[in-house]
Length: 191
Image (cartoon, rainbow, N blue to C red; front, side, top):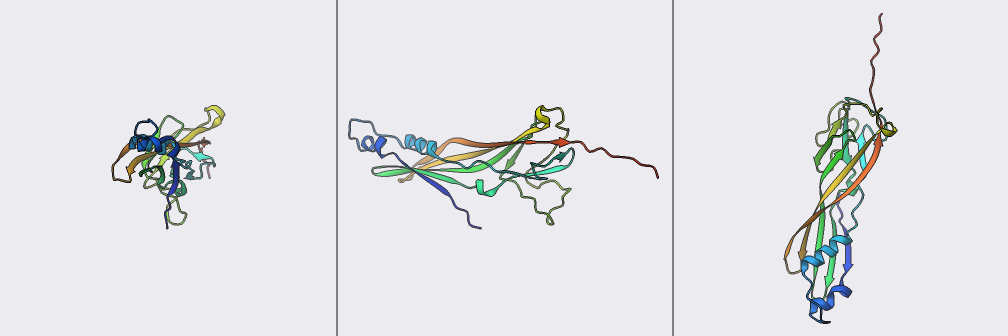
């Protein structure tokens, strides 16, 4: 499977080219400033949350839920700022998915999680990479559901066309949905 990287180009020539050349009485713009401009222009994909059982379906207390982020939203994104005589490239790479279960608990997963595949995975098993088990019903919550969310942390690095580089503050993207969690009651019958 081929992974493609999204790229945004930022034209900083109007704001920085004269300064970078020393013309126009401006100061030279540092590569760090250009990297921040490119970082600010990045359009990161919103996470697409998925689970098994499906997150839009009613969940049951004590039944393992597999959690993952669709792979289309889990790939590096790049941006570049150009000035006369050089450029700064910035690359954001998704690292962790922090799931908020809506009941006060969080689950931190390194990577997007494992997609559940019927026939390959045991439906009663826990996810090998990212999952949770609800321990109580959402019946007492506003709207009768938990607000389940995921926040993706993106590591951001920059590099100039001359080979200088470094790290910038991470970026975060997030998504949220309501999940109804019910308790299953057993019925005892006498024969």
